[in-house]
Image 1 (cartoon, one colour):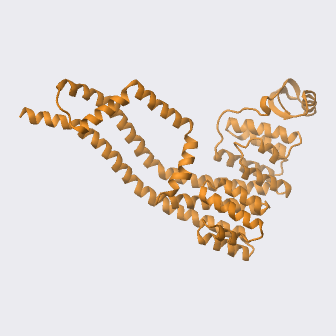
Image 2 (cartoon, one colour; image 1 turned 45 degrees about the vertical axis):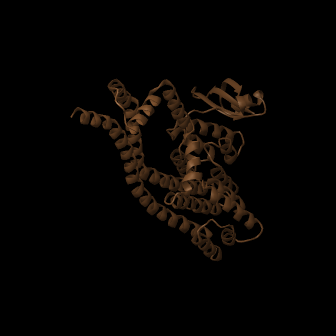
Image 3 (cartoon, one colour; image 1 turned 60 degrees about the horizontal axis):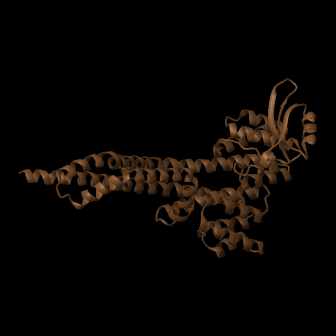
Length: 394
């Protein structure tokens, strides 16, 4: 059972946290053994403590690097966790690390303590930590984890940076269109109704669209759509990225290269840390974020479990480019699989950068053309009745 406590330490400072004990009496005994004077001890409802806020991959990578450096400097694990919790600037991560420290002090392993916060520490992270603890090289495992997190975060940052300008174009264009539909079009529609003139079809369509959008029902529907998208933006974005955009001519190869780079780095670190091959493949499939490659990798995992080599399994499963299986075959033959996987990841990252440049080079003019065409259609639809009226006056 988990118990939330509030106590005073020896210097008289108030401390809060969570510890694991069989009952409340045992929790009080653990607090006394820790040198704390209990002020309040109560069971944590639901077996976990809610924390507000968000922990980014950058925050997690920074904590991992700090803990690795602290362990390398000779600090005990518990002391390192306490220091890392104090140094982090993220309040949620600091609170989570405080609970992790309490669990470790209560006798849990670091991997078990981290597993209780799966929304922050994914299975790959926990698996590497567990391998480091079992093999007595936790500091090295944490360094590899930090390298993996930083490289993946760097790849994500490059993709976001490349898509920032197209996103700005799309946001600005959408804002302009909504401004015209919600404010300009209804005012001009009133003028056209007073004229009593027969309007062109484009103008009638636009006036109807503007009136429908600016009506209470239209505004309510628009607000509901925006709220739903904001609340589920991560789920929607993940579904679009993994199911729809992977089939596009340019984005499809880009998503594949990014997933292959993540696969190579992750599998290399897992194998170097002593994680068994079948578990490493399972964890790698979980982080691929590419439905086709994940399915093929699980098929390859099944074949590896039956005794085939990894390279043969990937060739038989399909889905992976030939050079990936060839590089892995070279690594298996030379007993340097980790190095070959790193080379695969580096090559895929270079290809990803080139594909990203091509994608953004095509996306920017396409967005400008689409947004410009929509705005031009709205403006021309509003000007057509004015042109007709000037012709009639002549």
